[in-house]
Length: 228
Ligand SMILES: [Zn+2]
Image 1 (spheres, rainbow, N blue to C red):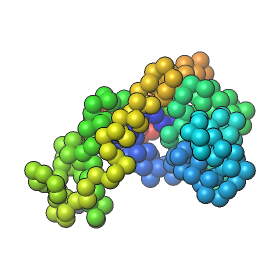
Image 2: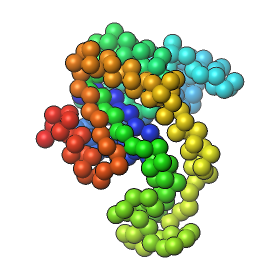
Image 3: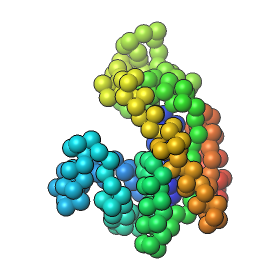
Image 4: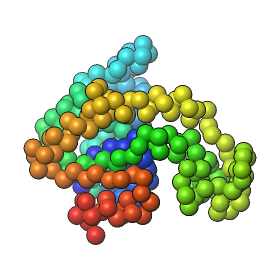
């Protein structure tokens, strides 16, 4: 099963992907990890990409698409994959759909988790880490930590929670959400292109309400994919 998943940070996309991975033994492929891996290993494509990222420019499709297609062909993707974090603009969307089609591995389904920008932001700001790994979030009923102010304590085990990390400050969150919610040139524009392609090619397209409870979102996801 080959699935493309869309959703802003804070939509629960990571949680839903992980549940699908456990259940169906597909690989969760996060595009950022692919790019970091090429950079770390110093591959030809990685070196080429670096000449763009070094000057803050967008890495062209001629570099990103081969990196992604190569990763999706790896042994751990034999049973399928969920691609997460790509495409982020219309040009990438077209190049990806074209590349997958030429490789003989077109998408089987696309999942879009919709959530209001304000909810996504509150969830991102509300994340707290328990040393034992229990999820805690000030903005999600059911897993809200205990306390009125920092430091908070885990709702499940009572451990003192780690505060927000620096890369999740409000400004960084706004920048990420701006890219996602840009319906002209950003991710939502890519979503629209992919949606159009699904309609034309009769490919399954599942829209989910990310503000619902995790179990409910998961149930709707499985139903939408025709899985029971
Ligand atoms: Zn805990």
